Each structure stands twice: as C-alpha cells, then as structure tokens.
Image 1 (cartoon, rainbow, N blue to C red):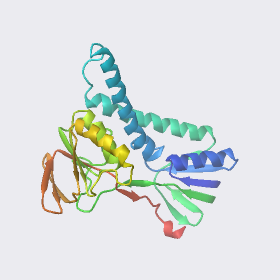
Image 2: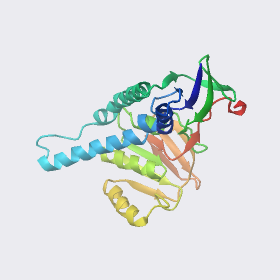
Image 3: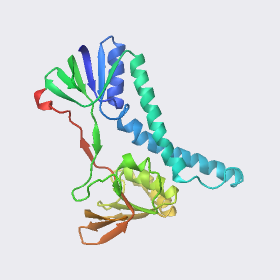
Image 4: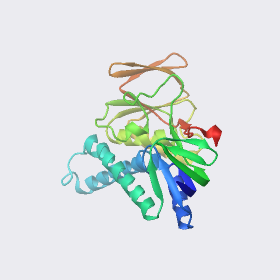
Length: 270
C-alpha cells in the first residue's frame, strides 16, 4: 500500500495532522496500537476533567436543593467506572471522524522496515511523508515500579471499580494535584508527597496558595521536600520509604508526572 502521508499515533497531534493532510488532498493512513484518540482523550486529561466536572455539578445541585432531590454523593462506581464506556465512545467517534475524512485507519503493532516503509501486522505501508506522533506512556521513578494494582498511574485511576480508603499521590505537579482534588472530593484520605519544597513549582504563588487552602479543607495532607526512593507491596498495602528512611504505609499509590517516550520499533532504520 502506498500513501502520501503516514501518521503513527492517533492522539490529538496525530489525529489533527491526519485530518489536515486529508483535507489538503493527500492520501493518508493513520496507525494506532492502543486507544484511538490517544492518552489525552481516553484516560488522560479529558476524562479526569470530565469526572471533576461531574463532581462539581453534583455538589452545586445538592447545595441548591439541600440533598432533598439528589441524595448522597454517588459512590465511585458511578463516578469512575462509567468512564470506561466513555473511553470506548470516544474511540468510536475518533475513528469515525478519521474515516469520514477519507483517512485509512489501521490498528496494531508496527515497525520501520526502512526510511519510508512501515510494517503493521504484516501489512507493508510505503509513504512519501511520515509523521511520528506516538506521545508518551506513564512511567515511575526508580524503585517504585507500576504494577497496575497497588501502584498505579492515571490509566488505572480513572477507571477504579472501588475507591481506596487512603492513597498516597507521588508528585505535587498539575496531574497530582488534579487527582488529589478528585479523590479527596470522593472521600479518600489523600497524602501528596512532593520532593520539591513546594507543590506546583513554577506556578504563580498567588494562584497556588488558595488551592492549598482548598486541598487542606478537603483533608489532603501535603508533604513537601520528601523524596520516595523505594516501595514494597505487602498483600493489600504498600510501604514507601523516603531518602531519610521514613516509612509510609497506604492502600494505594498513584504515581504522577513521570512519562517515558514511545518510540516506534526500527526507528534506527528510518
């Protein structure tokens, strides 16, 4: 198969690049090996903000009607689990939009054969122009390996079937603070551990200070200047150790703000 343009990765960058190429009249194919729409649409910033909006709306109406109409806050199954179906709906819409624009869509794992030749599940694609938009994947600091169960990333966090009673979030970055807001709003006891001496480092303190007050009002504990160097999973709990030897024990650990680049295989041959 020969195309004018091959786009590898269907996240926002790849999606809009492919649509733009097709709009200009170039024959275009896009390949994806995980979720159509990529991390941002399926289990990243978009679903997190959607969940936060849902919490905000529920609280607003409950305050207006004084719990007479809407009752108690829904448990996490209704707040988080629904976003699995949401992710699937997003995938369908992304794929439909690409196909309606005339973009060929292929799903599977692929690799570069040579400079302008890409193999995806045995199908050979030749393209005059190739755009790599493979983004990044969740990673973790050395000594704190993700296991998808007790030590998780955003991928698992947005689709938890059951809320933990307590959670440690590693990282006082934007992602970590968003999740601290989300889980504390759902009644989870949250501790945020940040190795810098302040959360949201580099942001305007006039904006950060009211946020700190809001987090503390929700019971969030902020521990700054603390670096976690190791973890150990013991049955239903996780033990974290700091550089100074202090230990924290919790039900779940959410690692934020650490990403690893996704490189297509055979890139050295491209």
